Amino acid sequence: MAIISKKKKIYSIAPPLRKYLKNQNRDMDLPISYEDLHRFNTSIALIDKTGRDTLWETVLYAQSDMSSIHHNLKKIYALLKSAGDVSVIEHLYIDRIDLCVYGNTKPFRVRIVNKINDLFDYFYIKIADASRIYGLELEHLISPNKINFLVHGDTLVEEHIQGIPGDDFIKNHLNDKSLNEMRLAKEFVKFNERCLVRLLGDMHSSNFVIEVIPDFDEIHYRIRAIDFDQQCFEGRAAIYMPQYYKQNNPIINLGLKRMAHELEVQYQREERSLIATRLRSKSSGPAIKNLLVAMMEDEIAPYEKVVSLREDLTKVYEDDVFLKCHSMGEILTHSLKLTIRKPIRKKYSSIKI
Image (cartoon, rainbow, N blue to C red; front, side, top):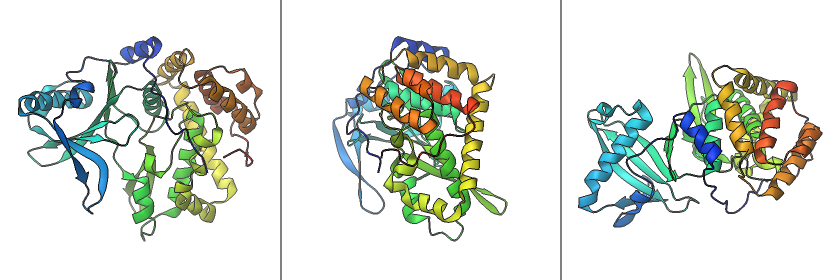
């Protein structure tokens, strides 16, 4: 079983990353900050439909503050969804603001509702952690998924990522008659490879969602990360491989039951080929290069974890170039380059977990 560090330090945004975010129009003035949302008077536990405590608390503000807070939150939603066109917020209202009391960074979650059709959406306001921001941007550039997020000062705003939480899917949907076991197993193999290549850790079932996509007489799946705090932070390769988390075993067992080794290798090759294509792309390639330049100048993990990870990856890929890396940015850069130079990694079964 993969075990991560119990508590991760929050890394502030260094000047090279700040410059990158400004160039990508990610850094802009926001009408309200993370700290502003801490001006609540009281909070009440948020209970789900089954009566369980969600470990989120709904926060309540003084009447004198509520109007301006809600208005500014709607303006942030317009920045996030429509490039600041405030005409889209005319029929919206803030239904609820929740605070996650158990999370490392204690994020706020805002529920916003369209009063015309009662459809709702969420977005999040968090402390701006450099690790998470690198993770979000890499997800946007390297994965099949696009993500909107904004930064200003020490505040990070993220859109909601839709899907069935992985742990809920395992508990409630693995026995569905419509479940396409092979397609789900295939998606997990690709997700596992993508996490390793871009060094996104802690992908147990609570930290990803599963999109279910009907297509004619087939069901397709996409696994999407929702937690990016462990981007390039841990010092062991197994932590970047979802296959080593016991919470994911029910899905992993589908692959063991349904998938021959030759198919697993084929899907690993496919995912690495897609990443290589994005690295070469005229649209995403330059941004990825600039992001990696910023990361190579940044300190986003203790140096002893850099040393440990480069040794692990040397074994995984049988490539001594990793031993010359002196930062997580350098390690990630070489990991991505290998998607172009090498078709597949070594099947390294004796990796420490």
